[in-house]
Every structure is written in structure tokens, then in C-alpha cells.
Image 1 (cartoon, rainbow, N blue to C red):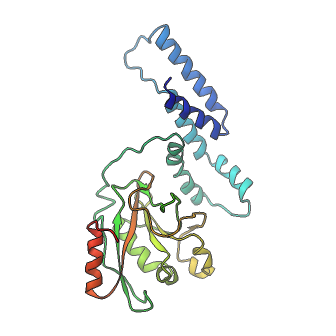
Image 2 (cartoon, rainbow, N blue to C red):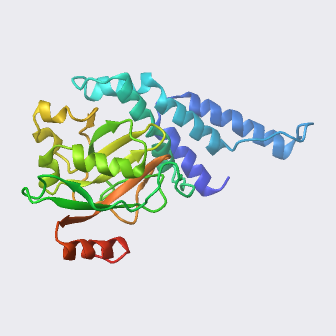
Length: 273
């Protein structure tokens, strides 16, 4: 067994509370022992998952089990109520998190045209933003998608969610036009994560900023997540692998003067700021 495979299995075994993973690994090892040293099955279509693949599958299923998530929430933050809607969101992070633990590289794929029509939505305006003078916002799709936005330290952001969002471009518009104006004006808005499969838009803000809002202002969102520790600009080179998620980084915040808008368009073409 190569060193990487062995170390990957050990990582998984040491990070899950499900003892069945050990049994699964042992059973798979027995199959490989027989296959490599004794006999082969008498049908040619047999396909055997490696120990790492089976271990990964069990780990993902364990993470996605609502009882696993609820037990941890009860231990760590029993005063933070969770709904079935929240559990569905949390389960969506399991595969990418397990893959991160075993250093499994993501499989790159082009953005789904049904999810991302325009990868660089720009000139989105918000009345009253930038001290009341009005501003235009521009965004860029991070890489080819299937990535969650992170900051330069690899931290995810806090978010406020909008639902029934049809596209990457619509997510950009929704965040700019519907988020509380304080979050837009104070320079803490960093971009958005669009979940194409669930038609959800997560508008991203610096850690600690959503808590500053009154309950009434927070209620514009269909749920929030305030556990993220991301701050400052989104990393424009790397994201956290997450299937069907499209990270939109804020690359321009312009007053309504044409010169400023042209400057931001150069950023969209790839120049640095």
C-alpha cells in the first residue's frame, strides 16, 4: 500500500467517531488480499473500490447523518437552534470537508451555463449606497466554479441567504440591492456564493458584521450563518471545493463617475489593484 493511501486512511480513521469505518477498511483489505494472492472472481465485470474510496464514502455518509450533526451541535452550541433547513445546508459541506481531510484534489469542470450566464456581472447599482451618492458594483466568477469563497487565510465568510435565485448574475443583483445598506456601505461586503442546485444565494460579509444588525434588519435574509471567520477581500486565486457552488468575488466598487467605472473594468480584465 502506498504511503499516501495509508496516510489518507489513517487521517479518516482518526477523525470520525464511526467505528464501522475500521470494519469497512478491514473487509476491503481482506478482499484485496484474496484478489492479489489467491484467486479472482469468476465474473469479469467486478469492480472493487479501494480502501480509501470505501473509507471516504462511509465518512461522508457519517457526516451527512442528521444524528451526527445534531449530537455535535448539542455538545458544542446547544443554545443555537437548528432547523431541518439548516441541517440540509450543513450536510452540503460534508463531501468537500472529507475530501479536504484526505487531500483529495477537486475535479475541475466548466461552469454550468444554466447556472452562470455572465461570469462577470457588473454595473449593478444600489440606491443610497456610498454615503447616498450611489455606486456600481462588479463581480467575477472565481476560476470555473464549484468553489466556495474564502479569504487569504482560507477562512469562509459569514453569510445572509436569499432563496429562489435562478442564476449567478441574479445572485449578484440580489446581494447588492436587498442586503441591509449598512453592510453595503461599511466596506464589509466581499461577494457571494451561489448554490445553483438549491437556487440559493449567500451574500458574504466580514466576521462579526451580521451580529451588529437588529433582528428586524437581519430578517431580510432567509437565514444567516454567523460562524464564518473570513475578513477582507476574497482570495482571487483559490476557493474551497464545493460542488454546484459558484463564488462571485467583488472586484469593483465604483461611484457613478465614468472614469471610475472604466478603471474597474480593467480589474475585470485581469489587472491587479
